Length: 549
Image 1 (cartoon, rainbow, N blue to C red):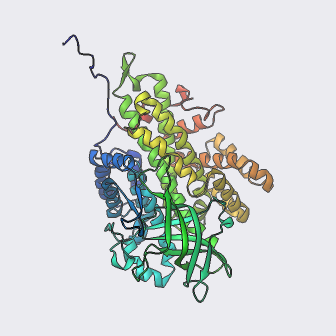
Image 2 (tube, one colour):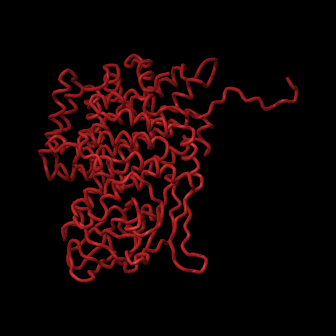
Image 3 (tube, rainbow, N blue to C red):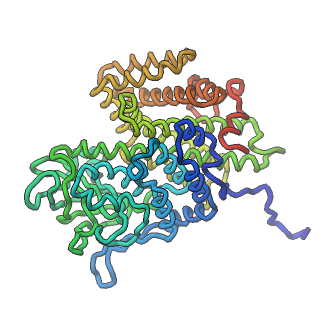
């Protein structure tokens, strides 16, 4: 050896890539098999592509070389164009070709359409999240537009299309389109009723009529979308939702002026903006005077995407930790063989399985119309968004720490997951808003919480801990409104953990369900990751199930 050689690289391992995200996930496969999904071959194809080194690189590039606003052309004409790195378009092509933006609606005869959609979103969300923003908003807009016959006739085929059309043209000239959202204003945030943007009818007022919109949006998601659903106030009908195209059919650009792009903590591949409307033209959607219910319906779908997306981030963080610690040596043996590291990895694995079981079950409930499925949709969508999106914020930090200093650099996926994690907890309603939404649903329809809680009872007959928790929750939800609001975070957290325990008890192996129940219902759980009694957990089987070695 050269005596002057000082740079010997040993015991260093890159983040995992070039593996099949679907084929290495026995938990996701079990869920799909249980529901008799016929889509697993297609999902395996997607898992190969999304997990390839090529698409990991596209994700890294799209987030490193962020979108740029070109507000004016060379001669000073307003153009409001956002320019993206080519890697962004590669992910948009993939999302579109696998129908991540529309699968439940483009395949209405698939009895597991929502579950198969969720699996797609879950796979792609493990690697690149920013491109899922316009994907999620397009998904959420479709059921609203399907109830507008004239608009749907013009837009339906373009919304459902698997072809990606990146051209900046009016809708009639394009093969496919994306939809975004414009709701949040400076003074209101989540309080949409405080919005000040005004809409004035061009002629007649009401559903399907044209309006001129003047005002601003503090967060205008994905401004290069072909149209946006925008909330504005009308003198005649109060708050309403409007379909606002980027281009008018006479060839003029609509009067939507991008002021600047947001310099966000994460989600950096995606463009978020501030805009002003200067008599921008739009069409009212939904019944006059029912703007808020129209918006809330769309929000239910986009909140579901937050649940699935955060579960995906948690899955990727776990897999990266397991792959790394099985190779990295410390104190004479692999990190994964060190007992203290095993406690952290086991806790992460239990949290990840509980998240995906809940997310996929919730998605499957969107396929059904029975009272129990409706209760899951109405109560557990905001509840799961609150809990799972919060958990990934904390746990992505723990996962980064597993890599040590190698995790705390911008050249790897762990830092990107850490930066990305908070967005789903904030977007489409913060944690407090989600908890209040659960309480609002319970107060309006007390039967829904009773249906949900009682559906748990048959699964937990041999679990005294869970039976006691179930009875306590029923009593707590019967408190006065003021008491309920003060305890809302506690109630919603306990409701979600109970739902996860029930699902694991019903569908997961006993060594997973028992470990989750015993660890989640101890006095010290949750104070920090890894507070696990080894005697309560079959650690080796939990970790092997999470990501087979």
